[in-house]
Amino acid sequence: MESPALLPDTLSAPCTQAGGGLWWVICLCPDWCSSCRSYRPLFDALARAHPGVRFEWVDIEDEAELIGDLDPQTFPTLLIGQGTNALFLGPLTPQAPVLARLLSSLQSGAQDAAHAQAQDLFQRVRAARTPSTS
Image 1 (tube, rainbow, N blue to C red):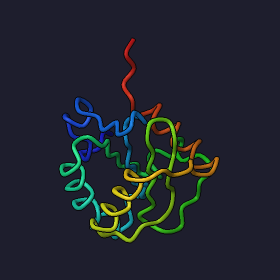
Image 2 (image 1 turned 90 degrees about the horizontal axis):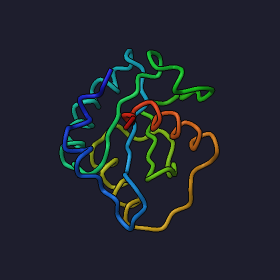
Image 3 (image 1 turned 120 degrees about the horizontal axis):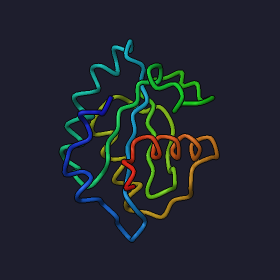
Image 4 (image 1 turned 180 degrees about the vertical axis):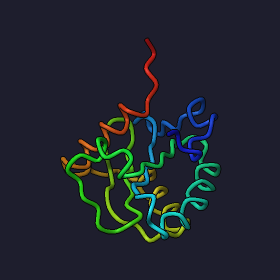
């Protein structure tokens, strides 16, 4: 199921600051989580406010094959990456300003890639959610 957080202009106007590639913000939540359901409209509003960033919502139960061995215990859990590099994986307070500040911070500075598990997850989500050009 495609996320309503992914807006049509997200794909046509990618944010490629410093030539590093498209930014992704991926929220990992189960459908049963009331905090996530409350957070979803805020997440969608942030997607509209950042049209050059690709926002995706991944239901960790319906799309368990994407999650692999990751077992998030706190929701929402966010995965943020640029190009092919995962830069952040972890729980985040379900408040729009917190995510906006984190994204801005990551976009404005040099940062190291996240750990291997985050990299693997980011590659699976990118592969599953990027339309093939063939």
